[in-house]
Length: 94
Image (cartoon, rainbow, N blue to C red):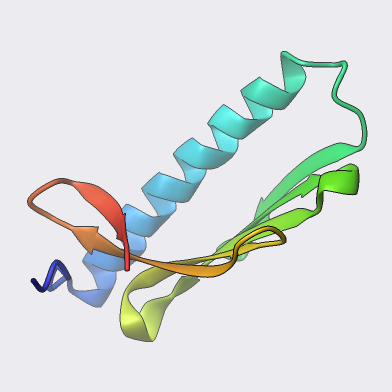
């Protein structure tokens, strides 16, 4: 039941950057298309994406290069870890 894909460090960095670039762009479009949502902000730099939703809390997504994982910190559910599944070409919750 091991879904972890054996990626090289360079492959992981490339896939991670593509994933977070796309996620950031889509979240920016979503926030811009809903001006009625107040107090929200998104920032992405140094491999860390931060989504602030005002009274709803702040979500942080960052890479864990040694584990080749993406980690999500959520004010609602706590930490989540994701591994890349090459067969599905998707990040899978661990």
